[in-house]
Amino acid sequence: MGIPPMADDFRTTMKIASPIWVDGKREAYKYFEFTYGTGKVLTMKSALHAVRALSKGHIQHKTQGNPVQNGGVVVVNRQGECVYSFVSAEAGDKPPMADVLKAARAAV
Image 1 (cartoon, rainbow, N blue to C red):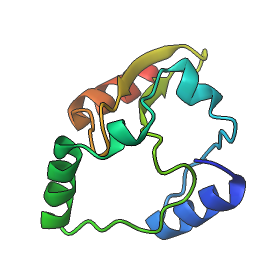
Image 2: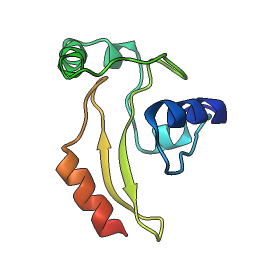
Image 3: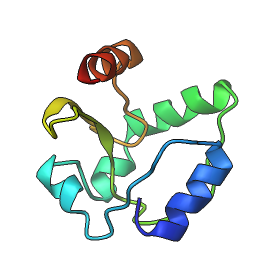
């Protein structure tokens, strides 16, 4: 997420009540080695991920921030320790939600 107005728009659009932090300098992306570049976004697998999402009724909202920056999932406990991380290999790549929830529950 790039700048605070983007986070506010995302929070409103997705109806999220929890805090959202922004990282305009992409320091966290670099630290966690999240993938970056056109070759990591426009792949055959990312096209399949898009078809999967569309078939489930998900639509792409307006692109904000850097369109060639992939993300991932990071779970941090109250002590500030990373207890789980997943780096998306390409656009649409996501971790098993059961793993994320297990890590989140253990972190609190």
